[in-house]
Length: 216
Image (cartoon, rainbow, N blue to C red; front, side, top):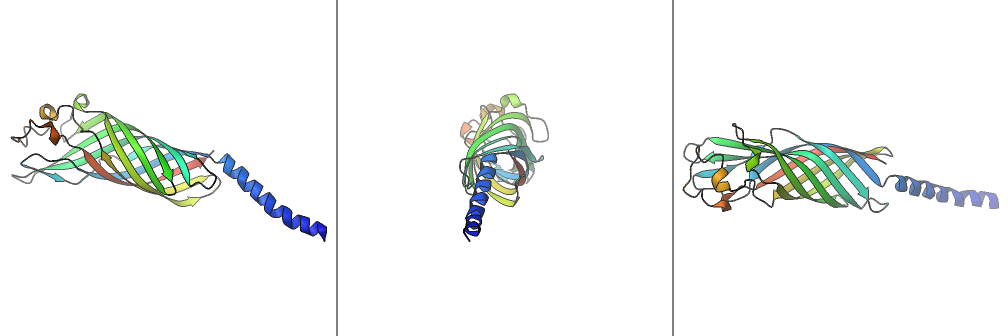
């Protein structure tokens, strides 16, 4: 009888120890992500122009790193490295023509996760830009943006986790250096208020994507 009792007691202890070992071996997770993004200029717009929604011409691609701070996976430190695009439309109010401005950045994004909620700060170095004709990256700022999101697990096992994420971000800095001198539309859609740098566009965007993080 005592032998059976010892067996019954040892089973949950063994299961618990195995689970603790698995958790200790899975504090790190690393893997790729892919997303599509749409955005709009969230800043004030010059007279004679209107803001329009646009979708990025290239997908968001990169690598995510996740360090779990507890075994229940409630909190984690995040770090993303990726190629990110921001796009928005500017409409000429006089004729309805829409110009889509596309900007691409090499981004790093340290952050924090609690449960399914994520918060990141994005730093982006411009690598490409156009609105049809090319825009020189020499007239673009290094951007800073804040990002809030949700990370929803679709499937997970000991190998890793497949997640669906939805994230919204907002630029804290203007896109252009000296917008009054470097506005790409100053000839196509002239405005009497172009001398004011307060009209420097700042993109706000929403992205939906998937990631697969391998446990280490």
